[in-house]
Image (cartoon, rainbow, N blue to C red; front, side, top):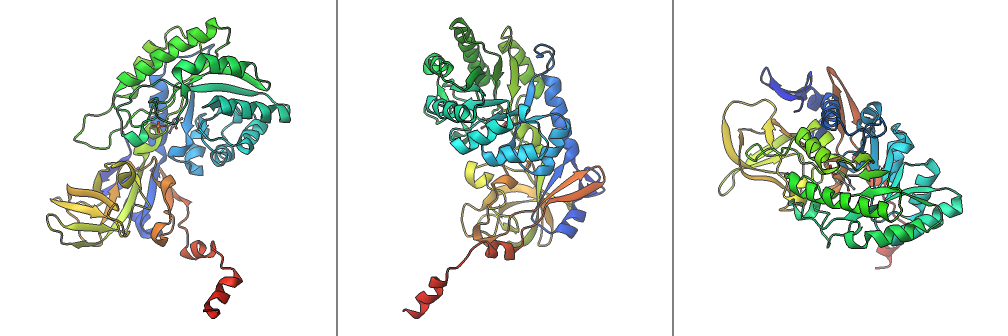
Amino acid sequence: MDHFEIRDGAMHAEQVPLAAIADTVGTPVYVYSAATIRRHVRVFRDALAGLEQDGLPPLVAFAVKANPNAAVLSVLAGLGCGADVVSGGELRRALAAGIPAERIVFSGVGKTADEMALALQHGIGQFNLESEEEAVTLSAVASRLALTARVAFRVNPDVDAGTHAKISTGRSENKFGIAYDLAPEAFARAAALPGLTIEGVAVHIGSQLTDLGPLETAFGRIGTLIAALRAAGHAIRTADLGGGLGIPYEPSKPIPPSPAAYGEMVRRATKGWAVRLIFEPGRLIVGNAGVLLASVIRVKPGSASPFVVVDAAMNDLMRPALYDAWHDIRATAPRGDRFVANVVGPVCETGDTFAMHREMDRVAAGDRVAFMTAGAYAATMASTYNSRALTPEVMVSGSKWSIVRARQPIEALIAGDSVPDWVHDLAEGE
Ligand SMILES: *Cc1c(COP(=O)(O)O)cnc(C)c1O
């Protein structure tokens, strides 16, 4: 459930009409609802009831890559969430937003020695290692700093998550994690390295999962592995079950399993594990909490359906071009009739297409549209392709709203480049 609704003929984010934001900030602009973010954290935590370990509830470590905006992270910090980070940059953003280091988990297949040192110096909660090579590097870095790294190995359970190939991570041919069968040896070797303490096991099989079956299979394998690791003498204290739960994008598709159903499955799958559970939801927390607000530049005829050309493009919202993602596109002031149209951006790429032959609210030049479910993997993937400025972001809470990322001036974009003197000389030397 989100807080974007049509009231009195106009779409609102909580109590704020989107038109008021568009009039002030211009378009395209991302708009986030703080109440929706807060609600999703509450719903997810409620779904995990009964999974306490030693009186501690599971750690909900928000996957920062889904939406790293400082205001979003601050809302989550205020709710006591942790963070799952995949770079030194995300680590610094999480810390800057007030997320305590001990609630930060560091994932990712390519952590550098510098990033490891930064994380160690801040005392993060856990490194999720993805290879034995990484364990060797972390051991060396920790030893040099005379610090100890708490580590888990991310295990690749070789399960097909049944999602889009580009967001599937748990098959043996994917780059993520260590092979399931090799995990006992990897743990044994890592346990012998200085500067590391083995904490647990981690798994994350993909994103936008719409079926709990593959997750339950993966968790079952992790349970078996935990027992084997304990039998081999490792003290396994944590199990990080990753993120991945899907959210509804397309009204005509079956809705993904609810957080409650996910929690029920987790209770069943993890019975008797006796570990602190860690979860890394990203999309589930912020996906429905954002929209991309755009204006219709013009409507031009097409062979089968007209083209609605909007002022947002693939550089602002890359998911359709990257993953064939489907976003609901609604008029913010619907006229009441519908038509079939293609919705495209101005970028010079055929891939800059948001929808083809889409039945949608009829719109005309000057109207505004909202791309729904654009709070996750959206603004953070924006680029300046076609020399389009990075998209601004706004956060709404009740009747309050603020710009939480200003529109990048084109001057700043140009000023970022520099032209060496010798380039000017080249012209004369013709
Ligand atoms: C991307 C990612 C997540 C979050 O995935 P969602 O589908 O957004 O919940 C969690 N953990 C890891 C390791 C990730 O790479």
